[in-house]
Amino acid sequence: MRVFITGGSGCVGHYLVHRFLEDPETELVLLLRRPERLTLPNGSEGRVTVLKGDLRSGPEHREALQGIDLGLLAATAWGGKDTFDITVGANLTLTDLLIEGGAKKIVYFASASVLARDGSLLDQAREIGTEYIQAKYRLVEEIETRSDRARLTGFFPTVIFGGGAAPVGAPLSHFARMLFENQRWLPLLRHLSAPGRLHLIHPGDIATLAWHFAHQPETEGYARVVLGNAPVRVDDLIGDLARAAGRRHRPLLRVTDGRLRAFAKLFRARLSEWDWYCATHTDQSYPTAIMPGDLGLKVEMPDMAAGLKSIGFPGNPNA
Image 1 (cartoon, rainbow, N blue to C red):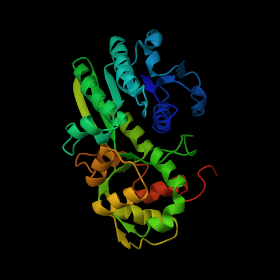
Image 2: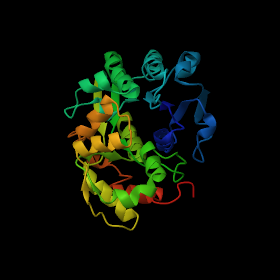
Image 3: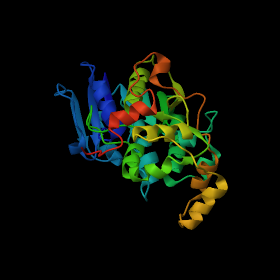
Image 4: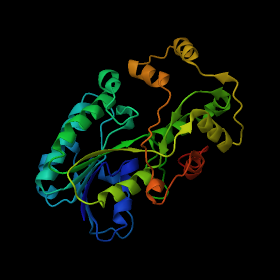
């Protein structure tokens, strides 16, 4: 199998690369802007071709994209003036190039934030979402129109948690990095209680699911797959963080909409319409979310406690 991957040097990308290289018959073609950030496993020599460039350089590599069996489009732009050009335009161009070159399966990465709980596209994501969210929404709309020419599987991750030097040399996920950067607030956080539910998923589990879907029978059409462990309450998440620091969760203050607005005003925090929407719609769970265990596959992170242990939290992430 020849597999094309974008974003291979990122958190999720590292796990994708390492998971697919576990099969000695798999060859990878990687499009990377910063190849020096990629850590390859031992024994992969001769099975990895690196194309240097950003997502918009796809047409320059048309020949190298011939004969690809599976495309994994994991790279994105997180904001800024080029967000739509990269997240939407470049990914669509790559999709077209892969299909023209013979690819029958493409897995692209969106975000669960653009979906309502029933799996339909969320109107608020289109209307008031950040540039990143609006771009992901547009990507889903437009890439699914190509489903008559290849099998298109959209991955909609929830909160990605994990990464770190071990075992694949990946950078930390955004949420994991944020916890390390703000661990000084743990003594205060443990006294808070907040409504809400959400999912977490480890990048290694995302890679396992990608491997699984890559080996399903070839069909046309599209699918939207929400990725996430069983939903957890925010209070349980706070409890896991407190226990990891050797403390107890002793809630003294309940976070409500009114108090949140008061805090924002007190600290002069400028929150967008999308920020307020997310803050006031606290159930961020999805009934159809799946993890590898649901398919009988090995699970990298069964719960938050295991995830915190895997990244050595609390502590020094660079230790």
